[in-house]
Length: 133
View (cartoon, rainbow, N blue to C red):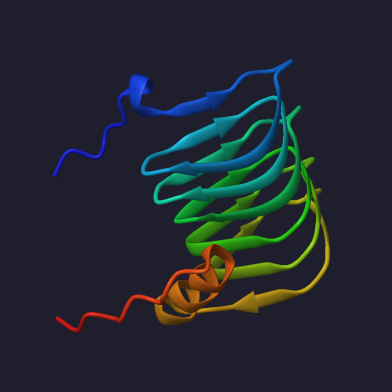
């Protein structure tokens, strides 16, 4: 399976850009500017060093370097990088925290079923049933 990401398939909010509202993406998102609202992504969200996010983020994975005031709902892995600042609650399956990352809030470790339930509550949709293999 090819795991490379085509740069043209990544939604991006560039430095100097201010976005307010709700962003829904089937793929990856990169934020280097300012975002206020809710982000829903079935892919990875990367928040750059100078990015400011106010609101909730719901996605598969997060690589976080900037500032957040809000909550994170992460299906798999959240990485809090050196120098980042997060004020809010974390709901994650896996958490990696680098030295000098700042986090002020609560953290709850969740599984995929709990993630589906929480994300459905945020979107107002019915939760997906877990499929056993």
